[in-house]
Amino acid sequence: MIFFQNIVLPATVVFTVIYGLIKKLPVFELFIKGAKKALPLTAELLPSLTALSVAVAMLTSSGATKVLSELLSPAARLTGIPEEVLPLCLIAPFSGSGSISVLQEILGSFSPDSYIGRTASVIAGASETTFYAIAVYYSSVGITKTRHTLPSALTADIVSYITAAFFCKLF
Image (cartoon, rainbow, N blue to C red; front, side):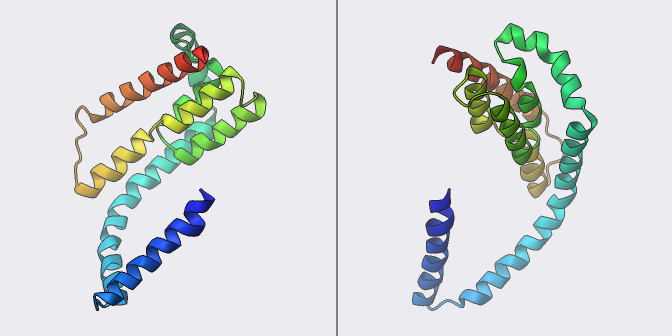
């Protein structure tokens, strides 16, 4: 990640500017024009992202994730998902940064090399922020009815959690 931040991103920007100058394009004016086009999109996305952030904060601070984890623990035992990673499974579809925080808590309590630590790591690395992705992508193009997207995406999330637990148990 540091390589990407320190070398790849700046090199991409420098390459783009040099390419634009070689082609005799008004680089700065084109940048400003693109930024202006992005502002309305940002304004459209802001309500969805705000609602999502509030929902994640409410879930974690109210203790709802603990209650839901306890309710889901029989199903987790049945599918082989460690009960200790259930809070991660509940937060991951909503927030990437929230799931990283939960992952850090799990890895602080259990060794990263333990079954629980490995399973949590695979789930955090392989899961999608489903609600965030739907909110951003659908609102950016004006889709209001998600139809089968949400059930399909949540099913894929659940299958990935079960698969992660299964393969971490094998290895």
